[in-house]
Image 1 (cartoon, rainbow, N blue to C red):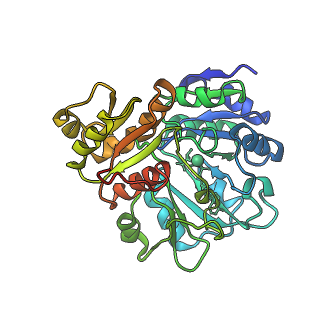
Image 2: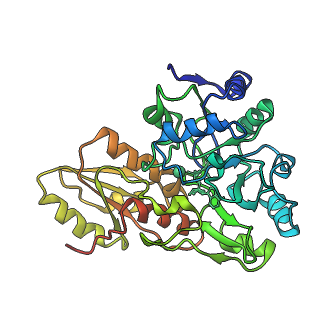
Length: 339
Ligand code: TXA
Ligand code: MG
């Protein structure tokens, strides 16, 4: 299969493919998603095959209107309506109880809930409206690899496996949406993202954060959170203190192989980089670092031979909670501690 690239003014043609049950990747403000008709069980199962995704990991349902959600979910509560009014379109995915028999097991992973999201990307909102159906929207990467923040990342992972990619340039946020579970009594954050706990609490009151590390025998609330994620083939190590980069570089200088370093410009310009060290800039601060994190991990995975990547850590609050959650998973929890 030849994977076609569509420009934003060609969404009608891309919508036709979706209606035919084909797979089309689409841009969002967080990361690129892999779209397919959410009401077509075959199309949804093709998404698992293309990504190599375990079948017990349910798919997000991506919509272009609140009315689309109402066709599948149980009547929306007042707090859910408030969340939608405040944060949609935007980086918040909301888990809601379904009316029975509305979405297939292939989409829901057998749960009686589904995760709904309306992304802040005009091209994709037009695409979904043109197709007239909600589309599933897992990140458009091979399962286990960093999520794609450029159409070229999607092409690298899925070329030949999907019908098309709608290219709308780089995504803005760089990490996936915040997931909030509104199907239980206590609103619970299942995955941190650009919409933060204080922002949510300002709208609906207390929410609980539940995105702790899940042990092998535990069933996580967001099934996808139990898998190894965002991992390049090199070992990622988190450098928590800017000062520790110097010892990391001393360690790197003694290695026979090439070593990667991902940090903001303030740190990179102060460092004396050994010859075998390759730097990838995370820009000026937390926001740009979040935007560039996955691109950096992919850069070292595809374009270089490094075995280690030292990556800058940030404080885990606000957007930092999302950044550190993804970095921690890609590092398998490994921190650099002055080896
Ligand atoms: O920003 C995003 O959310 C991106 C863009 C493309 O929209 N999508 C995305 O999808 O990150 P995915 O499939 O890579 O991550 C969705 C997560 C998975 O961990 C999955 O287990 C969880 O949402 N999930 C899906 N349905 C759920 C449900 N009913 N209850 C709890 N978690 C659910
Ligand atoms: Mg994903």
